[in-house]
Length: 358
Ligand SMILES: C[S@@+](CC[C@H](N)C(=O)[O-])C[C@H]1O[C@@H](n2cnc3c(N)ncnc32)[C@H](O)[C@@H]1O
Image 1 (cartoon, helix red, strand yellow):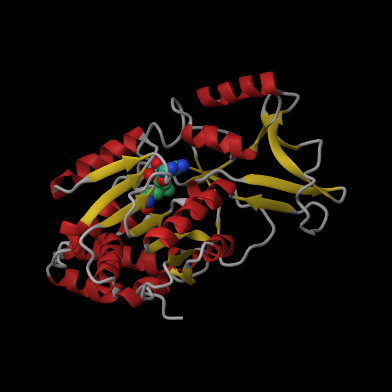
Image 2: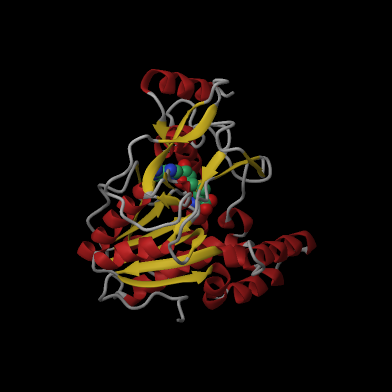
């Protein structure tokens, strides 16, 4: 068991079983041993790879998506560009480089990066200092600049802790993490039912709720309703809400038991896009999506940008460009082009963002 696992076991010994949400929060964000707090998890040597780490085109297109909106908003002289969970800073680096091509936009942006990990903040700082732009780091979304806002979140919502509830004897009970007779971490159910949950479901069904993500979406869409602008979120998940749990743990690109190595394995869940969009709509935002990543990138011109890069690439670079593009666009089931979905939420007076043709 990991050091954090021993801490969690001690806590459960003292206080009793804890919610899945608290377990995930500790596993991902414990200040000393939390997964994101201590490492750079990306790439072949890490645990997983994300779209901006696969191809520079991904961040470039998102930068141009923002620049296009800025132009169509009438080129406001002050705009807040926000990224949630920026990882190594690669997406923002590629986005800013592409935005530089559009006259005036970089002179107007104030960049805010919402990041809890000190290790990743440092990486972002190193990568972005060449732009000579005002960049602020925030721990959460509670105090974003009071300006029209363009906001990007790639693989952010999937990294937030969730709650699980299970239908047992006709009532919902919260699923908890406790200890079995061998003093190992195990899932169980709270004795008391959740009286406030009145969703009908079959016996044994599991309901997964990302209440942390829902609160963040509420705050973001309220911010956009007040100050104007648009947000875009890209993540793996489902277009319609449903039953079932999707908690998974990845270590060195392999799936492992989510209770086995807290702090050492990445824990994620699939995003419920229907619920997120519903929250944005109820805050008065217009919404687009979800659409699959392949359709979105195709509409933004990923093929044309790939062809332009190939013109000046030597053979190794050309191979990397092509394989990156294929990976992002692969529409086979469970591959990035179809598993990943894109949504946008925006002020009702904004033009419809690029890439959503439906
Ligand atoms: C799966 S990574 C995605 C990184 C990046 N967006 C990319 O596509 O490469 C999740 C990111 O969210 C950050 N993060 C996780 N929980 C967070 C939270 N509650 N608030 C802010 N950032 C968080 C992590 O430190 C990391 O930068």
